[in-house]
Length: 235
Image (cartoon, rainbow, N blue to C red; front, top):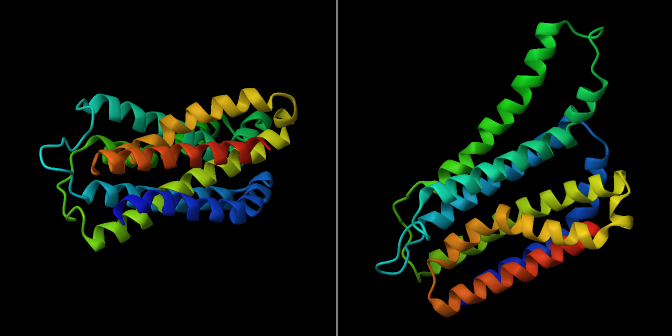
């Protein structure tokens, strides 16, 4: 049953993506502050889901952080924060407002505060993920229990929904600038590898808490889900 959780979570997430992407993509094409709240809500769910995955006990003798070096995980967390902040600034209309900003609208100190504080605030909030990813958390959910299976399913879906939100942002941006029609193949390859770095770490943390076959199933399912999201983003 435990080995079926990742495929079931990814299949459920894909069904949710098919239902939510048209709505989210249309919403994100209308730039506004409400969009930042949507992404902010998805990020909260994402952070909570990563916390739950970290709470599942790993196999005996396994490292709590696969790969061992916290700096690698911290760097991946910062990378996510950069892209998340950029996405929020785009869908909220901040980037467009910067291009249209003139000194006649605001004095120089106000412009400086506006340009610095808004991105810095979102970046600081998103760094919570970096802390969650790179710090060691004491496991509190026994591996192999029914409770761990249910929590894993919910947490994996929560992580995947952040990827669905990111896909909606890419859909909106690619269609706005007409890039999907001209360079779809190039964008698909770029997005696939980008998603591996952005959303792969939580799945690796989960897979490290499974046996060898369970880990292989979890990672294979993640790759298929990522390919599906990339296809949806550029189609």
